[in-house]
Image (tube, rainbow, N blue to C red; front, side):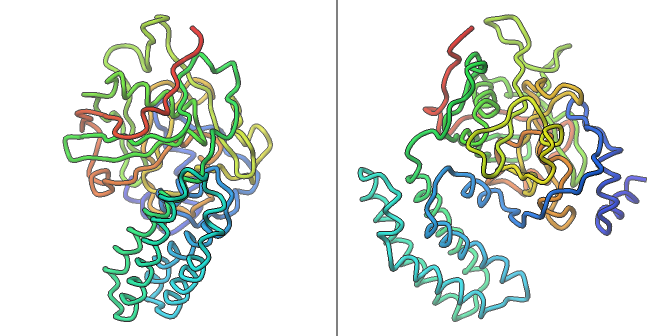
Length: 368
């Protein structure tokens, strides 16, 4: 029966809808499907790209530069459209010829480093054009990745301050005022995850706090389904979440979703319940390895320590047309270790979880 469902999944949107209705995920659960139309498509299926676009910056040239380089991968997949690849590279080169437009969004004290990155990008784009002339697909993709990593650093340097105030009612919870990188060592290899406090500060802060406490060390992945999800975070014993030793109580975090165009997240309500059926979250379920807070089906504010990796490949589900968007909180993406995540199953174990970057962005609870 499972093989039949998978076959339907690959060939029919209806199968996807049926699967989302009938397959359950312990504490993740499902809310009833809506008769409203699904959201409009979002073609971005790379977690690194989604994290770049989620940064709270407003600089059109750097976004155009990013888009030009990201498009190269799409063109190479589409029967290696070399003319379109060259056009993308030329567009990137033209943008870099006007560095002042990019630097205008970088704080003055960070501009020397930003200029160095721009110069490195210029050199890299010239190299990329030479590789395109030889039509070396693998080398082009490797060079493109290096350049996009530089753009990530450049865009991060444009962030001047945390973009909004988290509601005071959540001051008793840890918050991540920025981003952090976590390395998960498993029995089958390592995973690297970037969690985004700019879009989900409470959800991300809760996760980073638990990582710092060593909460996930030694925990097993408790539920899995190939090409669907992989869940962990259920501690040994009768409890299903984190019990705060200071209060002796279950620490629950609110459902937290930042919508494209909004200045701050919505809390405690799904987008469907809010009547925002066609609105897209800044962090959508469109990338393999989306990191998502699990919660009881009937309690939008009942998440605690359990989370899951979303494992749908882009070709198996239309990006941006996922029934989970707006119902569960994505708070980060897998950035390294796809081949490891592909192999993990229920019963495998997180040997250790470590914050390797961004711990300075964690804000401790301000109230008991």
